[in-house]
Image (cartoon, rainbow over all chains, first blue to last red; front, top):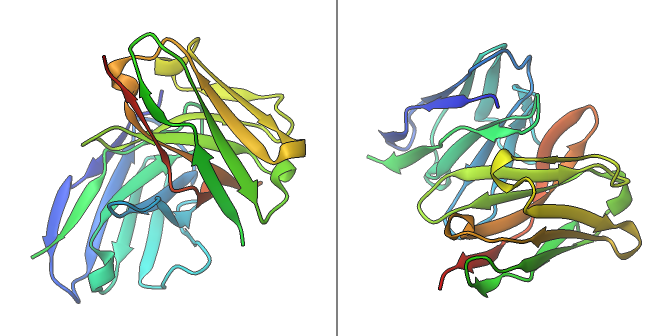
Length: 107
Length: 120
């Protein structure tokens, strides 16, 4: 199975900060990667698919980039509602695999 | 409104069985791949299994192969997960999710989850 290594595992930031989370695949996955937001007690939410395509309804402060093995999720200006845990998921080959998650906390 | 609602979770002893269901509404269920994802207490998300629109293709994570079986009934707009030989490490919240549609594989609609606890 493809392994996804996400970093950092946790991150403290302030409202208004620019934040970047990275995900590295153990082998090339083209652009077949998604980013998900998870808040306690809520279902995961798709933010980005195909590495850089913004899901409908997701604010434009979220963006994704990368191809091959290295990917990034960027939040351009953190808002209070963005404090959550973020996961990448490779959907290039089965079994699909998530990164271990990045917990974004308020500084 | 597009919606997925899971049910069937509960407390089961190790070695026992449980069948989860996911009721879909608000979209053409038969047109989409469907997926089960789980999250164990204090752990991250884990992709478990998915199934093609007509049920002809199923893909499992190694840890559940031979124990879990995914199925669907397009006439009833329902997805199922039969879980046998349950282990403590299967304890998790189980989510069903809809794949976004070709050519992409991301999951764009999620249920609220159902909790499975495997314990004696």
